[in-house]
Image 1 (tube, rainbow, N blue to C red):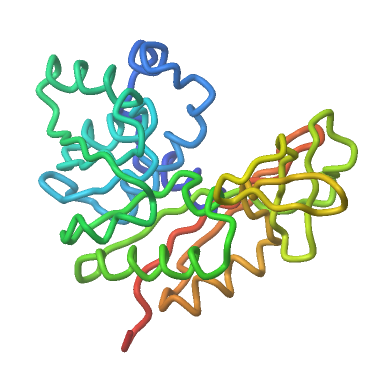
Image 2: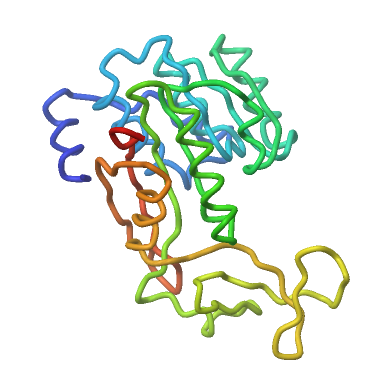
Length: 248
């Protein structure tokens, strides 16, 4: 996929819309590669993006929301923390960009009751550790896609170079690819006793094939994908473009 989009850029002389000053203001320099990927995907899938509706899941500081809005899309930036979108809210108003802001958790998105031409999920799926919750999340996303809508997902996956036991943090990966982090003893919801210690489930890091299976079960058809190997003792990054499967 990366090669295809690089060829597309060379052929169409496409340049990323979001500028360096915006990236710096939003603390988004580390997101440059993903922003460029997202905009290149949009340029390929949506030749006329003006006025299309986009949902940016896990908007955080709003780097991707700004990038989509600068393409002319009507963007809903969704994050569980209101403070995360404070800076981008101000910038969007100053630049007269069409970005609205919604606050809520990943498992509450069905409350939006809207349809979107593009949904972008940056790591929300990663941070939902339990399989039933993940299935519910993916099904909600599919129901929110407009006809011929597309879902772009970035999620972390298990990679050969990633070894949780070699990490400085007190973490462990179980047989279901759930990453647990050690926590002080507590009766708070989500704290589980294992092997004489207490843990909370942080995220799920399955191999790429497991992600593909989850998407297919949720009624999606995969259009394209790429895997980015991250240096060091880190999971890899899987990027996918999917749409609703015919008849679903």
